[in-house]
Picture 1: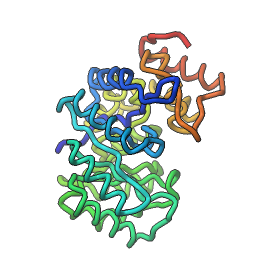
Picture 2 (picture 1 turned 120 degrees about the vertical axis):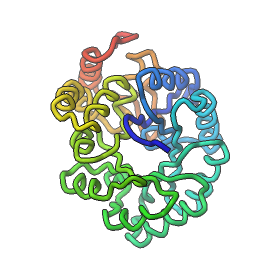
Picture 3 (picture 1 turned 135 degrees about the vertical axis):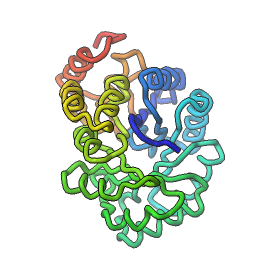
Length: 297
């Protein structure tokens, strides 16, 4: 399976009443594929996975698989705090037809490195899908170290890792683990260029929700080693990436959806809609430099 390049961590659109908005989700899927996105993550952290009811997860994933119809791989976010729950959700994603699972390190419970090794081995053994490991210590309180990743990469069902730590040491350590059957994917838009130039095969991106075409350009240039071109594209993207850092993910990126005619800005509690007008204006200005806006702010 060719999981590389520009991969979007999709938001989950909700209507004003808080229900799933599958019409907007369809537009978002088409916008992504039309913009050159090479794979899609459904119900990851950007997709507010932990605010979805079980039946909503199934409806969202099944809808995405039907609508995408094999045009790009669809990756299901199936990570839970417990191993048995993660296995069960991964098996359900497999039954629905997902191509792979993105499995975050167990959050809140703070497992040891040996616990992480055994957790991911169990999910890979019994979940029924190829796995992409996901390390995002800022959200989970748990940092999976490179030596643990090295111990897991020999498993035939583990395809690679999404590493959201963007410091130079971690980028270098992850790049050293790359081999033909194990990919390193950046999980941090702000350092994606550096990671891909160092050897990451692509990026699972938040900002790609709003600007899939420009983000694909960045991934193409950086993964081809075209440092100057990648630097120029990254400079164009940076104001939007910085604007999205003005509120917790996905609050800020969802604020951009109405500007593109892709749904409401509504998240689910305990997240609340972006209230800072200055940040919203900054997002609007940055978007306006990159894409035609369907709706005025």
